[in-house]
Image (cartoon, rainbow, N blue to C red; front, side, top):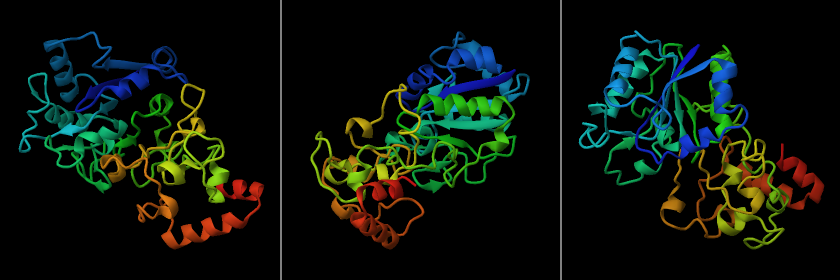
Length: 319
């Protein structure tokens, strides 16, 4: 039996709604097939009031073993570091999180708010919100850069606004079945199995992007990256490999990728309301090139792909 405790801070509950719609496996299958015992969840937990605070205290004292602490939403530290803007079970939520994370075998952050601070952490950030172990791209966050759970791992980050439901349930299954050592994390503590490919991979407009073909929003053949600021070429996520609702993704229905799995989200272009501005040749945001590539190499590759035949460009870009 694997005990999972799910808490929520500064959040909209979007990741909870995503989680409850998981298909492979479903939430019911987590319980019936993989031995996961959900100690408490803010939307489906039966305990209320003092029953919840007693449960949390039992976890902290190790009377109840806490295998996985799942946190959704930002850590609200305001005002002035007191955390009283987010009060829960008679004390600031941040105090519960600190003590619970110290005894948890694994700590998992779900969604952008929990991973990087998300929308609540956008400047001027009056709530003093932050992520569990990151604030945007800066490592540290609430628990600190050196935090390790009892199992010796940092916070496992599953970003997204919201995170894909199967990313969540499959990571929980990996831990529950003793395969946590196989969960390889990138520099931002994201599981590489879900956050290695770019969203661009599998996008029907990838050929147009490779050849720098211009089009228009909503019309077949147009490259959304150039026309309305799609961030698919610089966002690591498996949205086009593990489809949403087993049906589609933003880019497959000609909607721009907003880059919601990257630590900069929401990006400055979104905050300023210019997501629908053209980003030809990355001229508006010159620093936004795919992770791990220099700007020079990125432009050189783009120039080469422009002269390749259609099928070769598609193949090269999808690698």
